[in-house]
Image (cartoon, rainbow, N blue to C red; front, top):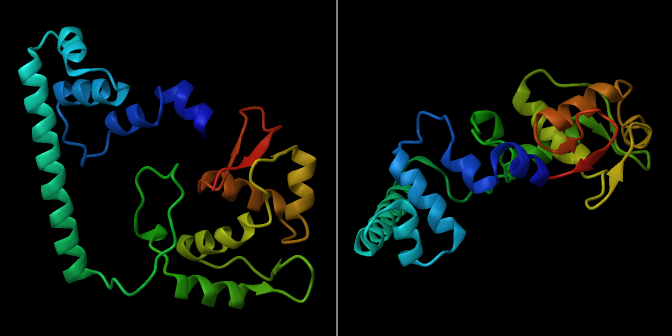
Amino acid sequence: MQRHLTHQHQGAVNALLQSTSKYNTLTATQRDLLTAFASGDKDKLIAEQLDLSPSTVRHQKFTFREKAKRAKLYLAQYEAIFEDSSTSMLPIPPSITHPDDRFKISETDYATLVQKYFDFSQPTPVLTQLPKGEKKLITLLYRISEELDFDRHYSTAEINSVLKPIYFDYGLLERYLVDYGFVARTPDGRDYWRIF
């Protein structure tokens, strides 16, 4: 994923700044400034690069900080009213740049669905059936991905040997793990690695 972000999107920061989401309201100038700030360069150098005065750069940095403070306060207010903060939610795969309700999965829901759809009588958990609905499927992918090691690359045959005992249609599991951000693979489909 890191290589993909670097080569295709010039890094994770740039991918965020250039997002086409309707919620990305940054202007072109703001994107340029944030990209420059991410480089870690001094304000004077940034001012020279963007043909601005150093005081303008400092003012913009202050403005970004103030906006971030307002956003954090609003988010805290929203969550206090509309969300149950006592419910722990599963983390979302970082490659999912526009998460929706399918990825709002509580730990309670996770535990319930894992017990319902997996048979744990064997050394490797066996998926008894694929559930209907993407949210349930994604929930089960969290458990399936745990059978793969981080910091290890798998050939097609190796990842198939891991997934085959879990479900008869292991090729489908492989595709879902990639599509939903748990596993990355090279374009030729010969190399797989767990990213979440």
